[in-house]
Image 1: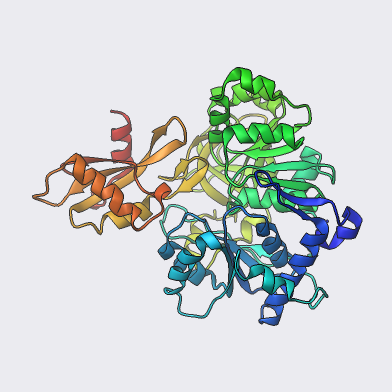
Image 2: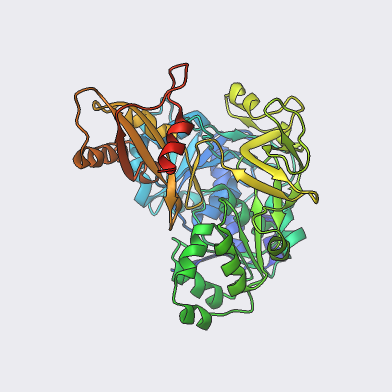
Length: 503
């Protein structure tokens, strides 16, 4: 299903509800407004294969913009609402976006960003001209409906954001695919479902779950911003049947008063789905004890070469596993590309049609770097399979920090800090954090003659935050006389990290 099926779904039924404000978009409104926005883009020359972007926080209009692109064959790129203008400029420019939809809160950042883009980019702003422009469009079909495609940005370990590109499918936008198919097959997706969206919609999984829920005909309840107590209240208030989380959210909810949590029990909640980062065994066990065996985990990535999934019952029998392959076939390969036997640790690869069709936009070299000679693709993780095909991850992507379920790529902060006049060289890596799982830490080798101090450490953190969003910058800084180097002269990043963490 999709908004064009509003008559069948019930035009007055809720499609999107904002949890705090209660603002609601019905299926009829979602159908009309997404069609009108698509017509606006069509009249401005956008055709299947053209690119648009969303620079928005969690607002109801986010769904309208996604569906406008989905029903008109456009590539669409959600942009993290916490990025700086320089970071936004890079993504808008690199993606070739012809139009960006933003919000009042973010429009100044976007305005600054567009100074760094050489071509004209059309802008619509929710809270300013967006509604007037959309409402002025015809509510007639000006184009043949064909499915659009996301192009999300994933930096990998290079520190340079790259768009994850796939060819348009040619399908009709109502076809249930991807997360929507998983929701139907594994988690009872139907028009009766009421899904709680807890995370920023600009991330891959929350946006995919929003669209997947709609393809099942269900209603999406969007938290404007995650708050542990409000999330628990929303489960009860809105009789939520499905929800999606990251482990940090579990930790924050478990920290709430146990009696208060017990008083907010609900029988409507049937499926609590989590991913994005490894979940500590004790945290997951506590969640299952609290909510019962409704907790499901998936392992997947923006690149989408494959996925695994595991139920509570399976996980309790195999703590620490992320499940068996849900899409694609799993392979564990040695560094030379040889298939490894059960129990041996190696690179985690997926074999699937999507594994061989996605590309990093405009970067064939990076695309080739994640493919095996047989055409399997990896998300850069290391692990092993047991005799029943259950996957266990033993390491993260090389040097990638997972903070609160969000990937942070250290080279971006390293590049900024290297431009500081006091810094000779630097390594940034993740250190344990009880709330977010990991946060960035910098180990700095100073220019000769510069004296380490707490004041200089604070200055370097502030300097980084002037150029990058806060989540990408080190929270703490330590100084060393010299950084360990390999025989080639390059800094031995893994050795520096391991030595620091072992202290």
